[in-house]
Length: 334
Image 1: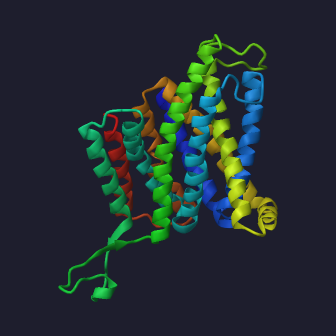
Image 2: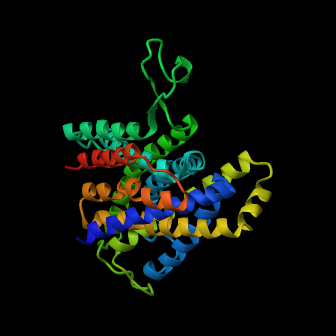
Image 3: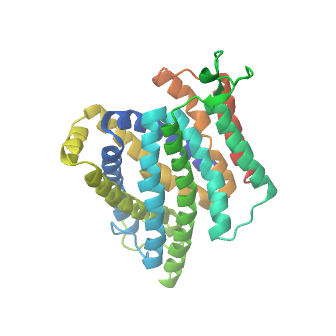
């Protein structure tokens, strides 16, 4: 039950992250938000590693470990989180999190291509169900009587997007990058375990000079997250400078927005610091399938707080669509 409890906590943590990030992204923009968030995350992780591993940097990580986790950081953080925050700005965190269920089919396809993992028939069915749940939530029928307003020439109602297409694109890319990044992280963690063994230790060894030593299998997820966050910070800063001539003014404005900064802090603590590290930890105590299914509950968990905090109307169709999408994710791991 320990792994399942941690995985459920991750889903709640990511729900809080999404709500905090929606407020912050709309106040300061995607790139300033992610730059500040990665900076906060890096500082928290450096302090944590100093306490639990004896040095504020990923101990025992070799070049292959850095390479795979850095690539995961580019895909999952720089591209994925940029698209996710853009999606929050355009369509909100409730729909943004719905598209994150695309990470499961993406991880299944990527795992098949890169790791040779099997694609079972239920996984293919899960893809169809997940996509069907998303479609149920974001598609609607035309309401009026002209072809231009939603009906064809014979008077039949056409399906149309109920959300801006740009928001759908960004949120879809975020979910795809999340799944791809997960597989790359798994490859990096496998190299990390091998590097620890090469150093003459085991994953249950305790760092000798740490103030609060944890077994390496508990501390490695924080070290892996730090590698990804380091790459994320560099990537977001480069994008911020490249796309904004007045990047210093934008960053200064963001830092001096008190409400936005508190929301960024909340998004950081519950996201790349606790949430991501706990997600890696959960897979140590339970199967990846159970963990990923519980992680995917976020689109359902976010419905009530989003409706309350942002005064958003949640239709029955949208709620059912979110539940169907999560059910589709569960099929990948039965």
